[in-house]
Image (cartoon, rainbow, N blue to C red):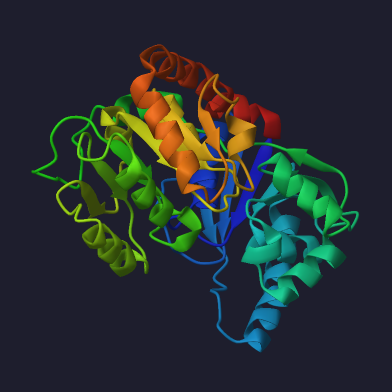
Length: 354
């Protein structure tokens, strides 16, 4: 089969990581693979042949609309030349021009469209996604699919979660833990993500300060973002500078997962929550806020992880204390997390697309 994957870039991001993994797995499975980018930005590797259609993003609304039609025309021309059996677009920057182009396409939605898209994109979605050339519509979680049906009136969604490469994770987690934190000793509680209010790290810091684990096990939050100064001030207000670490972005998070006592996803919202699956693949006992969307798709409550109410400091405190005080539960969650992660293994998810 000839398969093409279309997206904005292969820069840092969840959908970009998905495209990277799928393209490599499709190639391993014997398919002819093409990766199409609007911009030549590459952080992740890819399988198959790369084509840059060279229509980078522009800031003005007029430029965006002009780009939309240019992208649709370029895609139509490429499709006519190469005739793929399956074209998959990832994210609205690819979905919208692909639907407009008239070529057969499978679109995929990775974010909550109510809050993370511009108004013109939401209008175009309502108009374009039901078109007959859109052969299938895929959401990464059941919650996103439900919103697209109820709030946007777009029906017939399939749910295909994002994959994790368990073979690669097993290799990557044995590598040195970077960035180095010389004063960090022993295991630790771990959070990972952009330093932004969406990720709820302010809630996690307050919960840690109130938990039985405060000044017992350190808290490490990996990531960068505009919220760093606020989080640092919050840590100082708790006088926990020697116990809470913000070491920055980790290109390879898996050694950090492997060394963690527990992983906490305190997010106010998610599309799916890839880091939660990655943590489970490394055998972490996991706590997650039951936010829209993703964690409740991934975790079966008190079987392979703990779910707590969204934006609840007291819920996070209770879950941390429960893990600390209930050793049989803690060990069971570690074992069951590894089993659950197998449902998201790359070959399993890639087969869902073909």
